[in-house]
Length: 182
Figure (cartoon, rainbow, N blue to C red):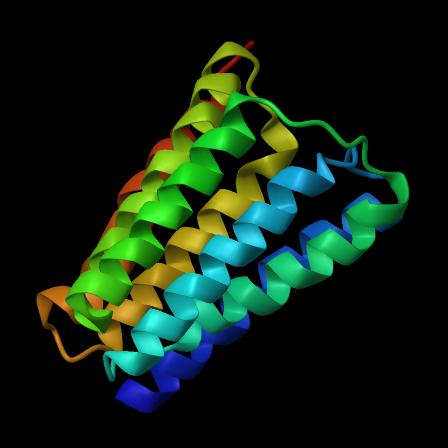
């Protein structure tokens, strides 16, 4: 049963990002900044690697890494490149997570990766508080669902669940934020 939930976590997390990428490609969503998504792909791949090295279930970060890579491909053609404080925060957070991983090992890297994901998400949350984008609700909802599947398929250790708990907290908050009336 745990393996089923682990697989559902990966399929759900990749599937929602593939859906989002396809909406970008078909013009139903505004193309985001490719620089931001390249950094998200790097963060997700870093979390995937440290999760794998720590021996914890990789479904959620694997799905994110594959999905973010697909979003990058869809934004390269039509997205507007720019570098702002958001990209700087993501790059610094990821760099710190990688440093912690190298210095303290993969388990600490998983925790640092969860912190990097959260820190990189704060500017997005602030943007959505200012101008909620209701069309993004499925991304937040299904990402929280994928994290729940991760917990149900986990070993119930702190390192095995920290990324999933952080993901649920952030994405449930985002669900409420984007559903607000403007």
